[in-house]
Length: 401
Image (cartoon, rainbow, N blue to C red; front, side, top):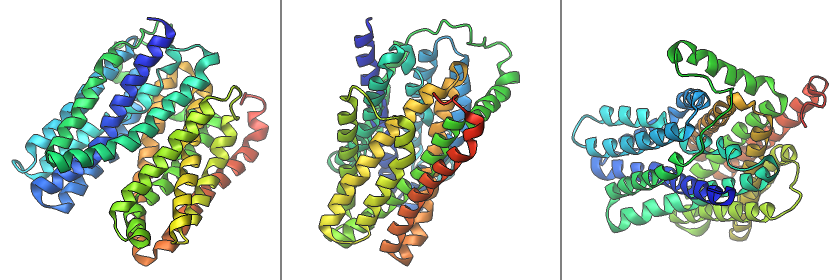
């Protein structure tokens, strides 16, 4: 298979798996509410599916780095995640809710495989000089999935029923199995044999975490993206309230989020066509300020500025994700690449969940004030990046190139 065909095959699998992943949370939330009638159970299922990623990401990344056939391991994770979704659906209403939540918790351990696990394999498919464009196209699969996944969950739930949405999400993830299995075998000597895996796995995980902390550009990009993701989680939680306040219905909140995804997808498409991409460190550092500007517009509470805010936030989010991937590809040691990508995905998911959790109390106080707080979180992300770069500069020297 030539490089262009391999990249298309990769992109199809990544887009399909990530659409199923983005669909799964919404579908599980709707199914839990429809089957049990309990909002608490439904939200617990969603929380369990996301929170366990903080543990699963580093461990799965360590296993991925040790494997000579990472595609097989990735395919196994996809199958396990899809199976977990189906088991949750089958157990809902038939066993105590705690059992279903525990199954969702176990399935969530494999969640980072659908995000960072795919992206960490991209350098195996294209030469380094083609990596920036491939990286931008890969980030676009995230933007497309975030647009299509929740919308598809809502459509399926409305037409066929909420439980069917979980089945469709699992099916989409399974459709990506051939693409995962087609990923190339790694033939470098940095891959470790699986003998003694249990004894050394903790050491490998620690090495990946230390690399994220020790390598200056990687540490800055990771921390900045996690703090920024907290603000994004707050925006997602505020979207229904913003839709109701500005346009008269919470349903418009979903349209606002779809607009953010469209703007992010468009911004990445434009950037991917450029022959000389912007320095990724600059995009990661100042992308949160663009998002903050959008949040300030949203805080006005008037229709035209809110629509403009959607476009501005998307323009900030899309390139920021592409730039983050570029920094990880550039800075991650090859033997730790899988860990760094999956751990980074886990940390971002955790930051998103934390931001969404903080959003509730703030929204009851004041929606404009809550949006201003979310903008402040984005400014904090940029300030951290700038200050950290200044403080590390004597130690980093020219090692950031």
